[in-house]
Figure 1 (cartoon, rainbow, N blue to C red):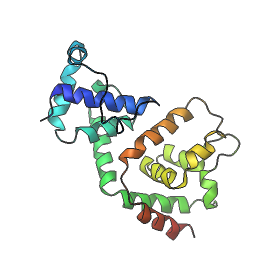
Figure 2: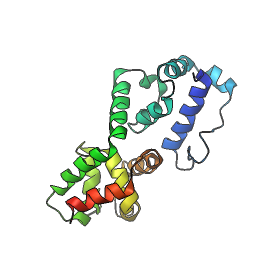
Figure 3: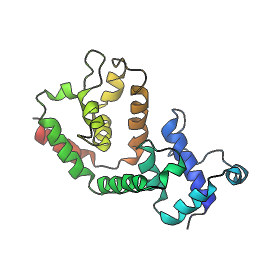
Length: 195
């Protein structure tokens, strides 16, 4: 079983990963500058012990499921909402290609050309991002589409919003290493709908 300090180290590394531009948890093997002394000074150390016990072996996935849903304080990871985030995360990860296929079909129902789904018009967010924010498609689908098409970087300069967009862009980019999919399978699903 993971001990509370290890739980805290993993939490801290993933928090840095998702909330800052300069740190990559995967690249640095989930290491950060935390010490046992800093851990024992925390008033919330009990939460890390409880989570380490509850999600033993799955703690990294649990933390990722929280950070992609913008839950960043460990105390907020102790409720039913946190459990829902984790359950939904696991469900999507286990059936990523099915979720992608469903989302691509939804995108295909839009009365637009394929390229238009990913373009920013008049400084607005691309339609694919709007559909994600409306819970019409999953974040995982957006991540896969960006990995294949690279539309986030290409359209980012055209988006006039400077308050919400930078955080959305970071969340998409930081989530990429944790979304496991088969590129060929996703390309086939894409071409089945958009040809």
